[in-house]
Length: 443
Image 1 (tube, rainbow, N blue to C red):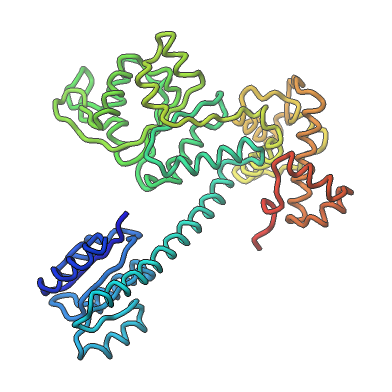
Image 2 (image 1 turned 90 degrees about the vertical axis):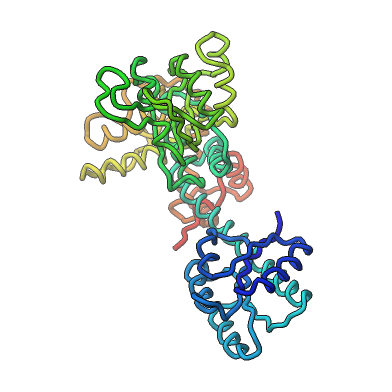
C-alpha cells in the first residue's frame, strides 16, 4: 500500500508541484484547495500525514490543526509557512503540529519530513491495533467463557474471522452457544455498529418464509396491508444470522444464493432492485454437504455459506469448563432474581462433571437457575457415562483453576496450598491448557 498524504494549499501551482514530487517518490496524494474539504474527506484512523499551508481563505492551517487534534491527537500535521509565519509555526508545534517547512522548500526537505512523520504514524497505529486486540481478547474471554483448549482455540478463531469480510458457518449441537458465537463475530468486527439480525429458519412457516426474508410491498399478497422491510434488507451494512439454516425451504435457498451472488434483492410485489451489503453467519447441527447429497440442501449455497467454518465443542468434551460456567450462570441468576446461592460442594461438582449434558450450555444454565430458585438438586437423573479417569482429569483442572484464582496467579502460594512439587505443577498446567497469566489480578 502506498504512503498517503493529504495536501491543502489554496495556490494551485504549489499543489501541483508538491503532487508531482510526491507521486514520483511513490506517495498516494490527495489535493485540496480548502481545509474544510480535507476535513470532510478525512477517514477515521487515517494511515498517512496532512500537509497544509498556514494562510488560506476560510479555515486556515492553525484552525485545521486544532480540528484534526480533536479527532486524532496523534495524526501528524506538517505546516507550510511563509517567512513571516515562522514564529507562529513554532508556537503551533508546541500545540501539536509535527513539523513546519518554510517556503520555498526543497523536495528533499519535504520528503525527509514526510517519511519521519509516516514512520511515527505507523508506530502509533500498530500500537493502537495491539491495544485493541488485547481489549478484544479480554472482552471475548468474558463472553465466551471457558479455560479448555477447545474454547481457547474457538476464541482465537472468532477474533481472526470477526475482522474478515467472509461468510461463516457455525457447526454445533443444540444448546452449544451458536448464536452467542455469531454475535461475537459481529461485535468484534468492523460491522459492530450496524444491525445484527437473527432469524431461526426452523421457526417460520414455509408460506411466510419469503416475505420474512425479503419483505413485501403493500398488496403483494392477501393480508399484506403495508410495506414491510425483510430481514435481509434490515441487516444492510451488518450481519444476518440464519440459525438452523438446514431448515430453509429449497425454493428460498435459490433466492438467497442469488442475493449472495448479486448483493441485490427485490421485495415481494416490487420490480425494483435494492442493493444490500451484509455478512451471512449461518448455524447448523448437521453437515450441510451431507444434506446436499441427500437432496435437502443446495450444494452451491452450502459452499457460499461455508467460506469459513467454526465448530463448537459440546459441553461433554470440555468438562473442565463446567464449574466456571455453572458458577457464572448461578451468580447471574441470583443477581437477577434477588437470591443467594452457596458455592458448589465436592459432591455437587462430581454430579455436574459426570452428567452427559445432552442440552449443552443451555441445559447447564437452566440447571444453575433452578438451583438458585431451590427447585432442584444441581443435576437430576444423572447418567454417569464418563470414565473415572476423565472425571478425575476434569476435577483436577477445577482444583488447579480454583487455587490459582484464590491466589491471583501466585504460583508459590498455589504450590503450598496444593502441596505440589513445581515440576508436577508445571506438567499439570500444560496438560490442562492453563497459564499463570490467566489468573493474575489487574488490581
